[in-house]
Length: 119
Image (tube, rainbow, N blue to C red; front, side):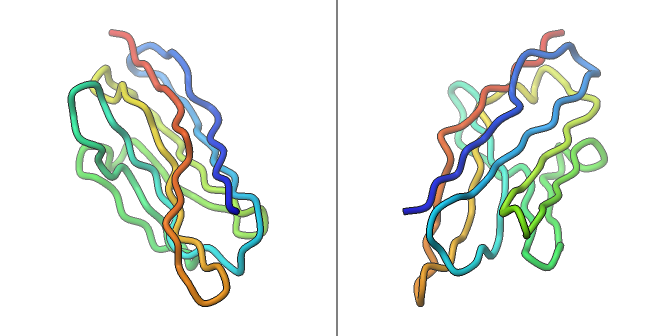
C-alpha cells in the first residue's frame, strides 16, 4: 500500500506565499509523474502542476509564473511553492502520483490540504 501525505496548507493573505509538501511512503518500485491538483467549492478538480521523474514540468495557465513545482526523488517528495497567491487560489490541494508497483502503474491520491487566500 502506498500513502501520500500532504502538508503546508493554511490561511494566507492575498499576495502571500505558501509551500506545500507531499511525501510518498510504502512499498513500490518507482514514482513516475507527481502532481498537484486543486478543487474549489462547487468546481471540478483541476491540474495545477505536474513533474516527471526527470524534472519535466507542466503548469496550469492560471498559475504560470507564480507557482513552482519541484521534487526530491531520493525522498519521494514533491513540493509546490506558491507565490503571489490570489483569493481564487483558495481550494483543497491534492497530491497525485503515478506509482510503479512491480509491473503495474497505479494512480494514488493524498487526502488533500486546504489553502485559503483572504483578500
